[in-house]
Image (spheres, rainbow, N blue to C red):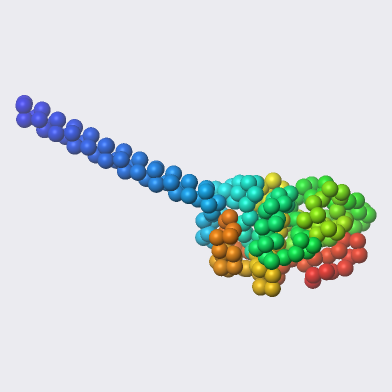
Length: 237
C-alpha cells in the first residue's frame, strides 16, 4: 500500500511538473506575441505577403493606421497606390515628399460610395451626373467642380476635384473602414513606373511607408482613365 501511495504521489508530481512547464511555455509564447505586436504597433507595419488582403485583421490594421495619419501602399484597380486621410495635411505632405511631387498637382479622392463624395462636389447639370453615376462604381476618375472648403492640397489650388467611386472590393473596403475617403495616387516616385506589387512599392519607398497592404491589383493594364465631367473630354484615356 505504501508503494502504491508513493507511486501515486510521483504521478501527481510529474503531472504538476508537466502543467507548470506548459504554463511557462504558454506564458512565454504570449509574451513574445505581445512584444511582436508592440513592435508592429510602434512601427505601424503590416504583413507584406500577398495573402494579407484576404485577412480582415490586416484590413482593420491598415484602416486604423490611416485614421491615425499614416501613409500606406495598397493595391488598386490597375497599380499599387499610396493612400492617406485626405484631410490630414501632414500625411498628404508626406506623400508629396515621397513622390517628389508639387503641391499644385492635386490628388484623386477614392471613395466606396457616391454618398461619401457628394458633399465635396459642387452642383452639376443633371445629365452630367447621370453619366458619372452610370460609370460608378467603376475604374473611371472624373474631374468635377469642387465644393467650397475642399482643402487646396487636394484640389491643387483649382476649383475642380478628381474623384472615383471604386468597384475594386479591397480598395472599397479599405475606404469604408478608414472613414470613407482616401487620397489615391500611384505608388511611385515621379518619373518612375507605377508599382504593380507590394515588393515594388517597398523597393521604391522602403521603411518611409507606415505599411504595405499586400494583394493583387484589379488587373487593369494602366492607372484608371480620367474624364472631365463638364466637357466630357478624356484627359487620360
